Image (cartoon, rainbow, N blue to C red; front, top):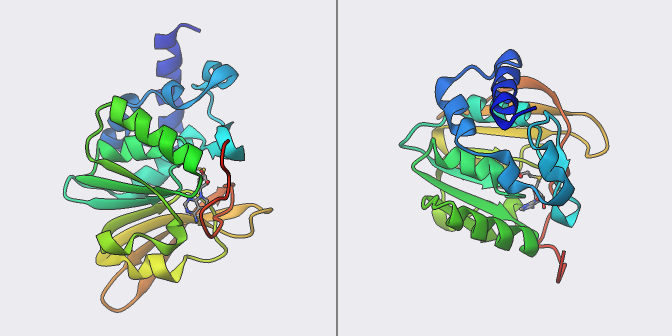
Amino acid sequence: MEPAESQMQFVFNLRSRGVTNADVLKAMERTPRIDFLEGIFQDRSYEDTPLPIACGQTISQPTVVGLMTQALDVTRRCKVLEVGTGSGYQAAILSHLARRVYTVERHRALALRARDLLRRMELGNITVVLGDGSMGLPEQAPFDRIMVTAAAEDPPRILLEQLRVGGIMVLPVGQSDAVQKLIRVDKSATGYDYTDLGAVRFVPLVEGVAEDVSD
Ligand code: SAH
């Protein structure tokens, strides 16, 4: 398939899986997934499937990225936290929708690569932080939106606390070796509302910064 045709198929796929928000679709069209992949996987960038990246991690499936971004309901006024930078793909998409994006990654090699890539793309409103995202980012809290792209058994309490009242968090929850549930959490002055968005599969949220010296 020609690149233009692949791109049309990619957007068609997103729409048919329920990603209908025009701003989200535009942000995804402006973010070529191929740039976040390496080697042989670049040829498969348009496929609607997760693909391997360094450090044994994965770049998410495009339709899941679209549905999560749409559920997060990001506006230009939002300060967003992403936990799990990975390739930086999701952060780049969020950067087109939000005022400011902070993204935290526990693998040094991934954090450095994503930081360099996003800088070269001149996406000036993203900060990549090497650290344990399960602790959030207290110095920048509270956040209007939080997206977690690795699965925890339950929504981490620290992240719920770092969400502003009126804010939204989207994350996969469940055992790492099983099918997980994607949920949206709406925080109000009186508590939390949970909406089930369907079944997904993510790599696990792991506490602490990884010990790897290289990838
Ligand atoms: N959003 C990514 C895909 C993420 S894969 C993308 O667009 O490419 C999940 C990522 O979460 C992995 O890179 C993994 O290393 C990271 N991760 C897992 N636990 C973490 C933690 N506690 N803090 C920060 N990153 C974490």
